Length: 372
Image (cartoon, rainbow, N blue to C red; front, side, top):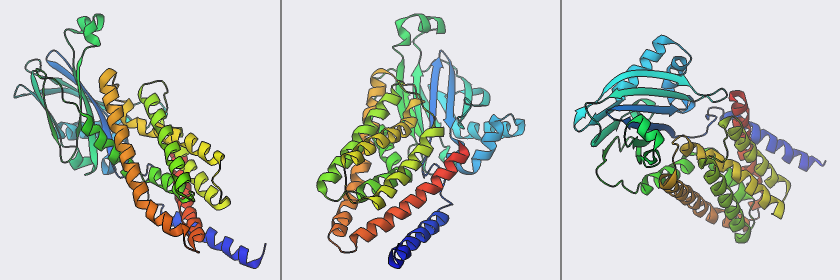
């Protein structure tokens, strides 16, 4: 190897190390937003509420939530007090009373925690109001996706008749700006498409790992044709796997999905260094990794246990939001990529940026393997 090539190689290695060390503070999940998945189900004048949280996403409250789920009585009491202070439910203008609060860890290999509340209301719901101010504790970017349903009759009747499939179910998103939802079960449910569209848009724009993977793909595109094929392959793949996972046909956990996403970032970034040609193999690889990214997107929906039209509506809205965010990124990057393609130093800039992206992916891969 000539001295000039060796010098360039050393420069790339040093830059990669510096970027990697400088990004050690980034969380393994690489998301600035967090989502709680909530289910509220009424049976007569009683309500059962389950909120599923990922402790890694809820900031300072994570430690006490994890300790409570592991059996620490004092920590469990602290979490119960916190939840009771920030979740309020009323039926027909009368507040419901929390009878019991408990925490439990999910299945082995899943670091999420479920908070369960049993409510006693004065009467079955005609009009209910749910208020959720947990964003004041879990961070301003926190939101809860709430699936709210009411069984048609008694438990036995609901389980043994068509009422079980004809539950009145609505999905709502509660966040810092929309902390309260009011539902009149005597009225037809709203469409709800806009909320899931906004959720999908937030999910892609706050997911730095997904954005960097897309950026690495775009950096490897040498012209408009390859850029369009690349984006189409990625879009088609994650749309398919998102739908398949949300429908329950495939069951996955973040223990292998998240490290694989980090590895996909490294792989594509290093390919940008190795080859200047975009081949069919590259497009097939993009499609394959897109399937994995779609499985990660699906985590925002699968715990809601939706079915029928509610699931179709959620999938449509969420996927449209993801695509809108992705299109925005492409539109922002396209002028820069076009300018770089016309410059003598364009190839060097692509390599340097790819090295930086690979360094970030390496940090995430190490962190996520440690958490798996």
